[in-house]
Length: 88
Length: 88
Image (cartoon, rainbow over all chains, first blue to last red; front, side):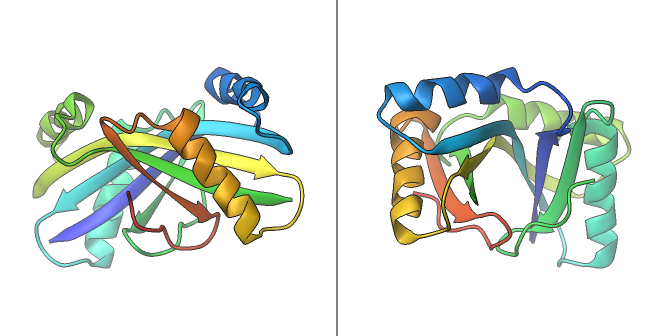
């Protein structure tokens, strides 16, 4: 069994109202020194078989076709437990 | 500047309708071999100052007080670029 993580975030130039809402709420809860907050989605995808480049490519295709909107979002894929990859 | 990631996921025993919706859609797009999908939230928190245990604790407190619902969600915090921590 292989478990991959797909992280989907708004593109940097895209307005992120959810992130701004959190940024605005934090000082009211006593948190200082926060310069920015961005909010996105996280998917855990469990697949049959062992981790492989082929499975990684398949999960990447899921990211492109279903899990992210390429117009306003970037995504990255990594094997759970490993560091995140580059967003694209 | 320090950037931490807060990943928030539904507790394993909690129904995850969004994840189930994605699980159901994947075969219709030609993806086979997917045994489970879970969907959660991902926050990127940018703070003034350098990464430190104190900042990590502060971001963990944000996770508890604002970013997750402890009744139905678990969360983990890690410095961007490092592997994810344990969900709790």
